[in-house]
Length: 484
Image (cartoon, rainbow, N blue to C red; front, side, top):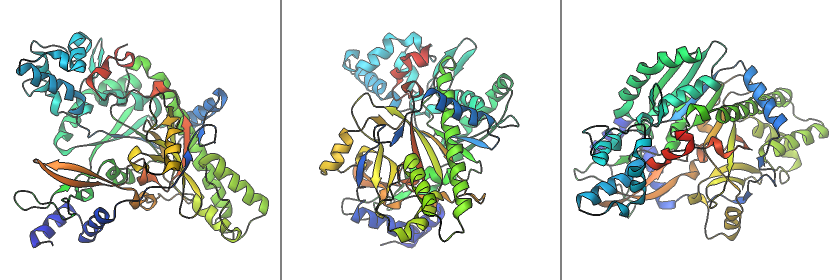
């Protein structure tokens, strides 16, 4: 099936033959649906709604925390989708059609003076082509989102502001890692170098910023309709990026105690940033407290072959209250070892926003193969639409996932967890794509906040909608939190 040229191509990317064979088998067998016990809600304890005093106590923990914090921002996403309606409008106008046929583009034009990058005679072409801004082929992180009296800011800069407000360590250092595409890495580096002094002076900090790439060794082989390796017109195998799940490798290389994960486009103007900072500190404080308690318990029971019944009940209650782990089906003689295993894991605390639209991907309680339960973030594609129980859980979902995570990645001995060991490889994705007009099937690794963190200890905390302000289309920049 594979030639010597194929083997060389794999080796050049750092991909082993066994990895490719496993990916090909996945295409043939598919990925199983998870068994959903219920949607995670406040009512069933899957999501925690904090009162003011509880939230304040976690903020205090975050403020007093003297460990290392790193802000991790996936930033390789292109802005092309953000401008797709403008591309359509430009094409229509060139054909003599009306702008009214693309309502979002019409709204863009009507409100052009409100955008930070407004300064054009031939508006759409200026915005999209390489004659000027070239936003149609730029990453979102370098697009000017917000206007200020002293100039415009990109999402990169707004993340620098956020980082200084909740991720500054005791030495005044703000550590941040952005994952970017190879072709735009220099653009990010140049922008950062041009603005860092301004923000360091403003916030009394020193930035330690790294721009990392998604490793080509995580790319996955594409196949045709018969699940045979897809080949390009020159006969080469086609490997495609494996989705955001590949970024687990980037996170695994971070040496900080606490890692804060947030998408590049979820930022606001600085006048609206206070709630974001407050709730991020809540999540940091909760993660620090939870992981500390897990380590404390483990240090007490790790070398014990038995513990008093009252202590077992305390441990069971802790796991159920904080992580929705149900141990009722575990045999008594296995209970202690299972509890140790459940405690000895990375911890993530995830903000969840109340769903005011249609239910979809978000927080769920899953029944594991060992009979226990866990909290997971599922995309709608992972839910079996033919399963009435799964659909009932989907319809009963009350919250969605805004990608607002705080992770702790060291064990009770002080050693760093190997995060790859806590991923579930059976939770990948297969989708239909095309290459130069030819249909193909593509595979993605388990999503970063989905199956890639499947075997973490997970807690969901309700956070307000004001903390979720993504820019998916250009007209999202007309919202108050981006105008002000």
